[in-house]
Length: 155
Image (cartoon, rainbow, N blue to C red; front, side, top):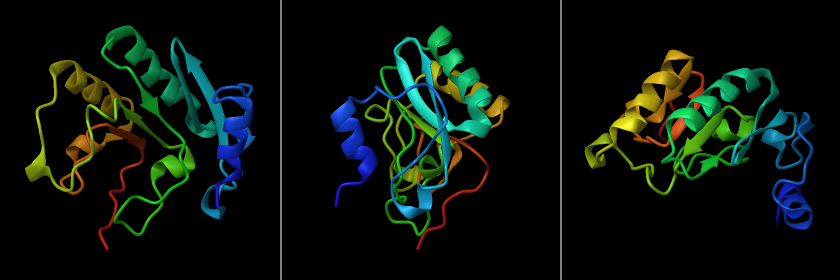
């Protein structure tokens, strides 16, 4: 079954929604999440309305300092693959930066090199209150930036 939000995006176009708070209408874990769309330069992301300023600050840094960033993923109502918990994306509390360039791997022993510009982004993000998935051992998730300190629990 296709979630209603996916159908709406297909019909209206991915970014046809206004930049106002909305309730997600996807699966039950996400139905009461208040989201707001942030638009900055070429990036448009849906984030939790209570943390819009933190996400705006992070997006501003990316726009001003990281021309290498091509894509940012945000709200997605889904469980973390292999874990018994909802992703922080399900609550509008996380973004993924260049997910195809910096994919999640099962553990840090399978890690790969991270360029200096991305490490600078991670330092900035952590300084303003984000947790960076590149500091996790399992899974190692360098593309991931979230509000909150909790790591996922492996089943």
